[in-house]
Length: 167
Ligand SMILES: [Cu+2]
Image (cartoon, rainbow, N blue to C red; front, side, top):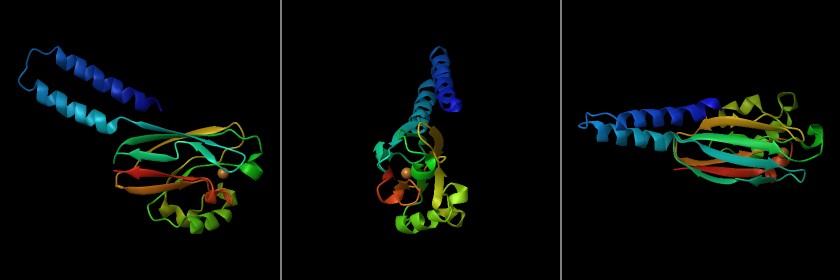
C-alpha cells in the first residue's frame, strides 16, 4: 500500500525540481512524458462490501485503463460466521465459466475455496473474510477485456459478482 502513495509523490517532486531548472530546451518534452506516465500509473481504488444476504455493494461495475494499478478492498460487513457466510473476491480471466469455477471452488474448502485446479483462471484474490474483516489487494490488468470477479464461497458466485472492464 505504501508504495502506491510514494510513487506519485516522487514524480511530483521530480516535476517540481524540473520546473526550477534553467535549461528550458528539453524541459517541456520531459514534463509531458512524465505526465503521461503519471496518468497511466495513477492507481484506481475499488471498494466492495460483502453482506449476509450474499451480495456485494460498492464498485461492482468498474472501468480501468490497461496497465492501471488497481487497489481493491473488500470488507465483510455481515455478522454471520465465516464458516457459513465467508466472503472473498476472486478476479478471473476473461471468458472463465463462472458456474464451472463455482463448482470447482466448492471442493477447495481447505484452500479457502480457491481451486488450485483452476489457478490459470485466477488473476488475483482476497483472503476469505469473516464478519468485520477486510483485505486489500493490488494488481493490474494489461490486456483489454471484461474481467468477471466473484465470491468463491460455495453458492455465492450466482449473486456475488461484478466486472472490471479494461480499455
Ligand atoms: Cu460470499
